Length: 81
Image (cartoon, rainbow, N blue to C red; front, side, top):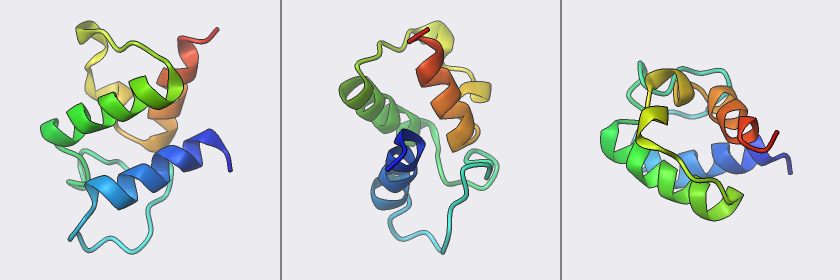
């Protein structure tokens, strides 16, 4: 399983509970569609820091980094380079 798929599965199982979204694509805008909100971002940050050994600074908490699963994955891997 690709790592961006792990992120997708986490979002679907933990952040989309009770929401009527049958399929989530890695390019779907998570913020505009209401899949993720400020609390969801905090939960996601905790997941990312724990599972991908990254540290997310306050200045990184911008919508561009969390709009899509692809954007989240690019943000996480950017710190590894």
